[in-house]
Image (tube, rainbow, N blue to C red; front, side):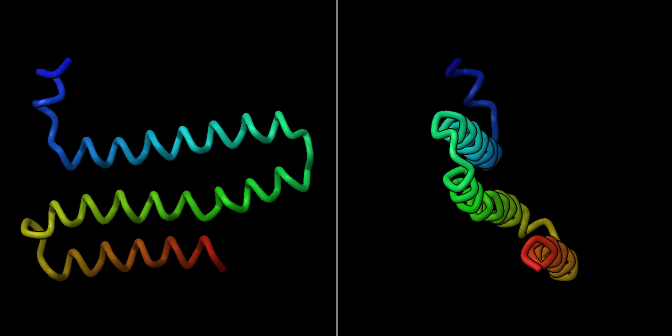
Length: 93
């Protein structure tokens, strides 16, 4: 197992780890909603998840862009950042 992990790029490992963490949080929240069996509490949990999702998205994008920053032109980085910004605007408006 150790040999397999040593061949994976550390940035990819970090990005995948963040996504696994996000999935674990989502799954745990679903279990808690089922256990609480209350709509008001489920909505509160869902509101918390609505903030966690974009944060994980931004962190994974940031890690990827930091890794690729030297390979991309400033114009391409600007377009990627603009796209991420538009996604966030679409989520919150």
